[in-house]
Figure 1 (tube, helix red, strand yellow):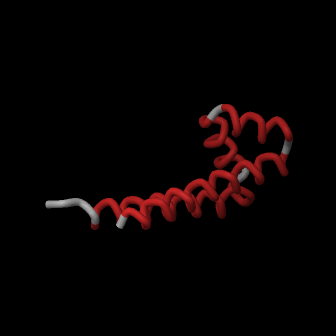
Figure 2 (cartoon, helix red, strand yellow; figure 1 turned 45 degrees about the vertical axis):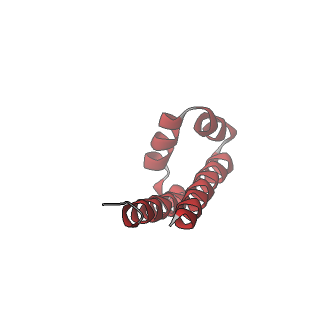
Length: 76
């Protein structure tokens, strides 16, 4: 299950990179803001949903893989 957690983290990071790419394609200021401050990335997600939805869903998929792997790997 540990491998699934690493895969989930990798997918989550790819989604974050995708968000940064979308922000930099919109504007240099959006890109720098998203890179330096996470709340700016949330604002970018709201204002530019069509450009940011695919990386956002990729990050959600990464979170889901991490959650499922950690839940299945937990010792009860």
